[in-house]
Structures are given as C-alpha cells and as structure tokens.
Length: 76
Image (tube, rainbow, N blue to C red):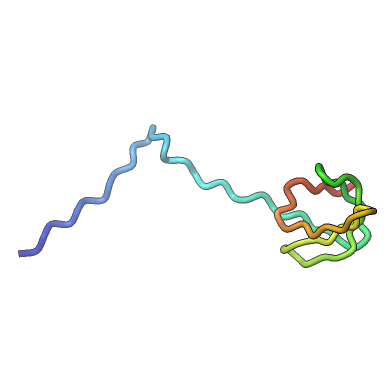
C-alpha cells in the first residue's frame, strides 16, 4: 500500500500571506568623477567603479568602497 499524498494547500484570496513579490529597485549607475553624497561620510567623488558591485569614493580625508545597492549614496 502506498501512503496518500497530502493535497496542495489552497491559498485564500484574503490571506495576508498572498503578498506579491516586489521587484528590487534598480541599481544606480555611477561613472568616474561623479559627485556623490553619502549619509555618513558626506560629499565625495567617485574614483573607481565595479559595474553593479561597488564604487570607490574619495571623501577627502578618507576613501571608502561602497557596495551595491548603494542605500545611502546619492548622485548629485
């Protein structure tokens, strides 16, 4: 005898678990010499770009590598 398979669960229309997947926001593209502002480090200039991965930013006294999705980095 084979064991019975469990029936697939029906999703109810009003269920809070029927949340559609929200696509991730597009990753902003930066180019060399772009002026940027960071919430923690302040104003800076892009000195290196790894497409879709990270940017290297010179903030004057410090240089930081900021990885995607660049949550606190804004192009001016």
